[in-house]
Image (tube, rainbow, N blue to C red; front, side):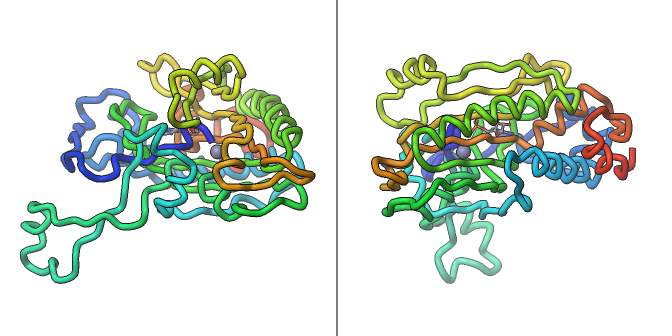
Length: 319
Ligand code: AMP
Ligand code: ZN
């Protein structure tokens, strides 16, 4: 995981979110006019048109085909996860500002006074938070045992991060597809190496200009300052960066992450043959990749370059 480790401000902070005027944000207004995005009026919260969703579906199918050993497609994980799982992963230590929690109203507070009740803020925290990355739900399922053999996962899910800014491509609610390996140190390293090359080829096939950057991402929790430089030195996280709008200097559309034994230790997962399990993942931001395709190739998906496979999916998209 990487920035896979955050969920929102778990309680306490102001419930007031900045309101966004789509007309004042030129890149956003352009995407709304071209029938890609549906503004909600709240910053970083967007709806997606049928045209956008057709492109997401074609992208998902292309990712399925990119899998090294074959996959029937992703398992969809819940957008809401137990707080205890996120705590065990030490996500909140590393990314407290990104984490968001689910609150509920006590019994008897509904009815005609509901809005006043909300105004008085009688909301109570629940045991759930919004998933900050798809793969966080996997490790608890493997916890407190030793694996017989390496495990590989193909998952997708809705994620939430309480982002401070809301330029096009930086959403609070977005979707992620992840390919995850958990096993020995060699398993995790080989998966990382394979997906680095696979990502380059995948984006080249889509005709997307990307640059690859070593990134820091303190998913290791306390000691982040030290770990940040250490992570950079060890090249644990690489990001595939592309332009998603005219004013964009570059946005990460995917990341490939080596967690070492961080999650194996936190979740007491034993590697086959002994020692803590190591893990790695390749994570794809579905909305950002579609936005990069639109930015680079235009508003008519049938004209987009790409493998024959993804073209087949996109040819059916109305322009
Ligand atoms: P990370 O765990 O930060 O490496 O995130 C994995 C991928 O999810 C990134 O490479 C992005 O493509 C996507 N992503 C992360 N944060 C956001 C966001 N706020 N809005 C849209 N996509 C995001
Ligand atoms: Zn992950």
